[in-house]
Structure formats: C-alpha cells, structure tokens
Length: 357
Image (tube, rainbow, N blue to C red; front, side, top):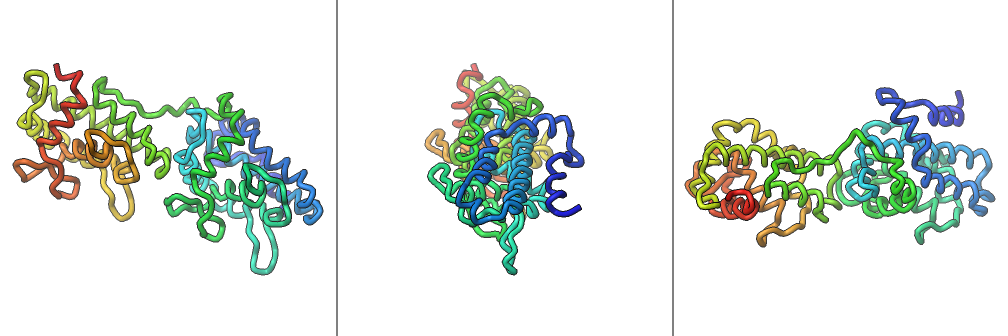
C-alpha cells in the first residue's frame, strides 16, 4: 500500500484498544468546524497554483486524519463537557494525542526534510497560502499551530513544533479551537457523558476548595485538565478525612475549633491515615507531581484570607495528616516546618463557619 492510500485507510480504521462505538460514531460526525481547514486548503487559489493536485490531496488526507484525532481527544478526555475549549483542555488533548498517537502524528503532520522533501500536512504549509483566519495566515499559522497538539510538550506555556521549538501558546490554540468548534460545542456534540467533573461532596464549607481549584485563572492557564481533576479529587478526599477527624475527636465547642482541637485532629489523622494521607496529599519528586501537588505551586492566583488559596491556605490545612515534632507548627510532606496550628485553626473556622454550630 503506498503512503497516500495508507493515510486514506487511517481515516476509516479505528484505533486499537479504544471503543469503536465511541470513536467512530462520534468523531466521524463531529468536529465539523475543523473541516473549515480542509475547505481552506481546497480553495486557497494561490496555494493551489503553487502545489500539485497530488500534494494537495495528500495534505488534505493528513489534515483530515489529524482532525479526527483532535475530535477523538476532545471526546475521550471530556474536554468539551463544559461547552468550551480552554488552555486546560488543549494541554489535556496534547497529553492524550502524544500518548496514543505519537508515531502516527509525526508522520501525518509531516516536516520539511533536509533533502527538500515535504511530507504530510507540510506539503501545503509555507507554500504560498494566503487565506486569513483570526487575523493570521490560516494554513501556515492557525492550522499548523493547532496541528502541533500531537507533539511532546515541555509543559510550559507553549506547544512545541515538529523540531522541538516553541510554537503557539496553549491559550491561543484553545481560543482558535473554541472558535472553530463553537457550533459543535454549543450543540453538545463533543460531550462525553461518561466523564463527570470533581465536585465537593462533604456538604460543608470545605467544598469551597474544589470550586476554587477549578475556577482559578492561573491553574486554568498552567496545567492540564487531568492534573486539575487529580488535584481536586485529592482535595476532596482529604476534606472528607478532616471532617471525619473533627467528628471523631468531638472537639468543637461554642461553634468553633480551638488550637487544641486542631492538634487533636492532627493526631487522629496521623494515627489512622498516615500512609493514605501521604499518598493523597502527594509531593513534587523527580519532576513528577502526585496527588494534591498536581495543583499546588502550579500558578494558582486566587486569594483567600489574604493568602494564596491553593498554595498557602489549602496546602497548609492539608499538612494536618503529617506527624509533627513541633508544639506550634505542622510540617509538610518533606518534614519541613509549615503553617502554625493557630493559622490552620483560623482557616478551618472560616471555611466551616456555617457547619460548626
């Protein structure tokens, strides 16, 4: 099978290990907004004067396949469940495509080889296209940037291209995808009903932590949807353990916690959940984040009680599960001094003001 026919076949063969009913039934008829890229390739007069019909056809096959994979990534990750595409979604899509389609994406995206040969989508990229989209060159800038979503990321603010060089930002690509797919997003065509977002389930003021994590503008720009979900889920689990500890230690008097109450909460959590807590709370080790640390120190900006809500207040509270040798201070996951019992008591009383009476 020659390469051109192979690429055409790719467009109709479902990926191994994935459910065809989800991928084929949904992505074959979704992401219609991405077809705009195909139409532009077909109709850009200057491009079609400079590029042979055969190369145009090859590039269209490659773009079509990448569009299918993009639609699949949106559905499989639940990125469109809130009817919009944001930077957290494009990061998650990037991770998904690189993990599942790494080798195929390299081939169909293509490159400009050292011998002058152009492959894949690059048969039309930087070859004279003039059509504008969102104030940029539609093929050379917008489409090419979107099609960098399949390459490995250095997890900073920009995608990397086929040569590993910085390219468009996750935020900009999210804006373009959101605009191209606006009709599909509003219609709910790209929704994955099997994926639900994390919500606070303690029924107390601690559930605010989940809302703040999800809505934080800094986290929305800096981390993936998957990391956001993992961090929020860890917070929700620790919230449940904190509420359990409060109930079991029976320390609440006069509608508020005292420093001594919080010390008892610390003792209870250490005695009953030390290992579990360490796993849920997580850490930053060897450039790998786990648990709540998927969102801690990752750009959160929300302020609460004149402190950074995620990095200071929530993280301080979530050190309640670590044993401390100090009389007045908690320690973090590395055994270093952290927030005082007095501060954590204040934060808990504020968050639980409507629950302690």
